[in-house]
Length: 450
Image (cartoon, rainbow, N blue to C red; front, side, top):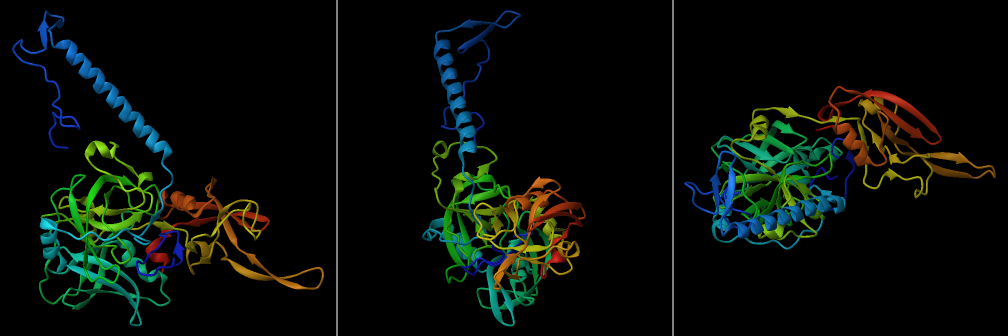
């Protein structure tokens, strides 16, 4: 997981992160309609609705048979598609994206109107930039929307970082957190503006698949640059607890620095906030599955971007802008990518069962109070008189009896709980296994800057 956008390396994580025409088919063929007044292919006769066959009824039955066969094939494709999809590889906008597509026509006009309402967000620590993201004004008095993981960038800093918003005319404003939804990766900020600012209006409805959109961001040394693309799917399910669900899938080329930026339609309205990308979009499920070729679309096999949907009637947007703070429960330890212990493959023995290794424990958090210990080296005296160093660390192998062989398995269980719940962790420390109870606390109260 990457709570900040700019560094190419993976910083330490934590378990808090870290249709139109109702009477048309997909192909545009009109649906058969029952005629009125005794005309047409089907004519009603008798109290029991006895049907008299006309010359065209045989053709109609053939069409119906073909229709049902097609629907059966689509259903089978959906089932097999869900069963055969491999696990998605998700990251908070990092990695190697495709070449940027420049906007044209109405999208270019929309970009030019929206650019001045977009800001570069920097997490600074002692005047050093620790992370870069994007945000955009949604009101003339300085209210901003961005991705929540951009706001929490300072969690990985050695000092308490602060966010600064930089406009296209290079004015800088300090910002304060208004509200957020950690599950949906959306946050509202208030910039300390002294004059009225340009803003991007929210769309009244979401775009349909195939609609052209332009994202604005600060990746690849751009300063509020354009990334054109189109919508491929709506209501996408990430399949992992630390990424937002019900998102908009995009072909736009997104990269570090674009998180939190606006996704704008051809009318210059915001329809989404950039959240994450996938290098295996075929593994992502959506609310409804219709093969893309029937929609006239083609899905890339190795890259897609995802945005949190924002509209005028969105309860999510209304809540965060009103100051609601929906946090996630955490245990209170940090974990790094690659630190899932597998006893069959690890060169170090940390016990018989697999699970995430506790890298460090957050002081004063639930894990700390329960006595969990982070990964460390200890000196071992060998029988021959020599001394060697050995890795020792706690491995969380289960939560409330549910095995957690990987960090993301653990995260899924914890995110299914509520703040204030008491859970039982099964912890492995070498050959010893013990259980500890702890109370899950809000991420923002446990991790600095959260």
